[in-house]
Length: 146
Length: 139
Image (cartoon, rainbow over all chains, first blue to last red; front, side, top):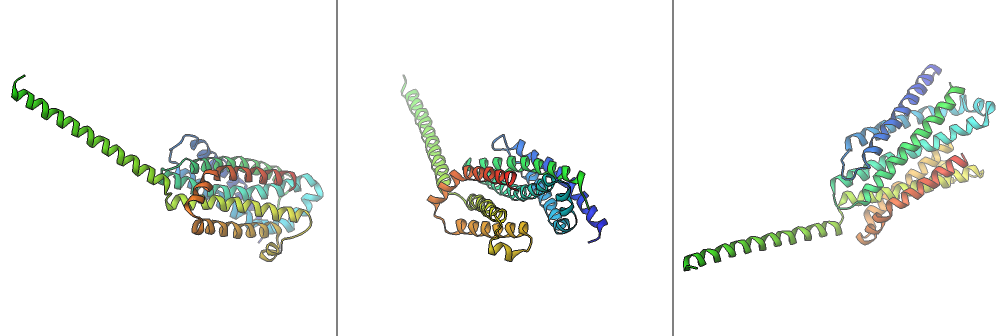
């Protein structure tokens, strides 16, 4: 991939990352009220997070070669911050999907509150981790980029 | 009271009593249906519970792969899946999580499934806290 394409990909990934973090807050807040169906918002947030994660995964191999060594040379903390961001990003994608599945089942089969609790925990955690991940990513992007 | 009035009163009483009886029967049926629905979870509930347990498995295996990577070792399966440790760990954890989901969905009896469903939220929360702490403390 050319550096222009990688830079564009990185910018889109960064902006989508913040949008996804905000989008995840929506179901996390709405699901506090039991028996409320927010399937559309939850599905949209999960889809946005997944697209953002795929863009990140697409640019990660090039990042490892082109940016990571310089980043660690400049500041070990920044390099570690990016590694933290990657791990948290993986968790955000997985949690948003399990939250969606649990919410879908809880809406369709009104038998138990257990799945409702799972959906609330998954979306709230995903939102918190996404904000943390986006903040770390922004801090890193200020110092080092393609 | 005249015989006609007595007859009418008796009919009214019988009508009200039968309506009350049918209402009670309906309520009994509804309660029974609700209890049956609660006792036998549907496929969606079963799948969601299995997926939650699968994600807990995913997070645990991801933590294991990451911990081994930090310690200077690589899980053989993860290193075979991808040369990049992050991708290798994620893919290995995804394979494990999918397997656990399929296993719980297909093989676990309803009694165990109900037990898992009641503890799924706690298990997930514990796994998330451990995962976050590991990612923040030892990236």
